[in-house]
Length: 184
Image (cartoon, rainbow, N blue to C red; front, side):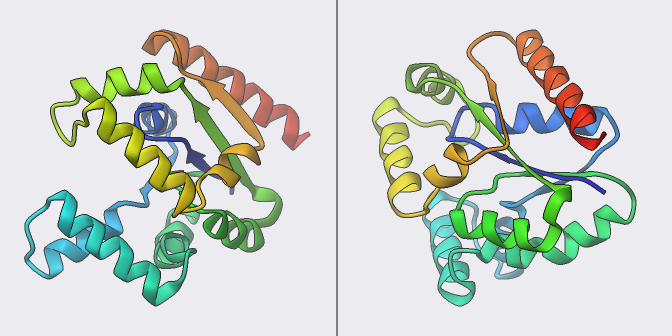
């Protein structure tokens, strides 16, 4: 069964794109759920400082491939039921781990939106919103400290998300057509 990992910077539309997969019957694994589960297990409040501490601890324990490693059992279980989309791959090391594990069944899908577009979206978010300067700092951190640029640059397919949700749906449909031709 196919495993499609969605990668992109904050505000690019990863979760909206993931919703299209779910509507089409795919399983979905949110890499960040591992952080939320650990916060709940420790009875810690959900906030940026606690989330960052958990992310850093998981990476100290498992290396830069941490989220691929801790999510592998869930991905395997989901694959038993059908194709799976992964929302939130970050690092080059996560990419390498998943590519090695799933081989030709693994597809890396990047979603791109220009910084101005993403920053405007993030400023409007009701939950976990970011001011433009915070979003720019997060971009730099994800590229410089989390090795996120490599997977974006190395994607098997890239969709653009500069327009409407309907435009993104059309981009998703083009990707699905590409997936079908790839399997032949």
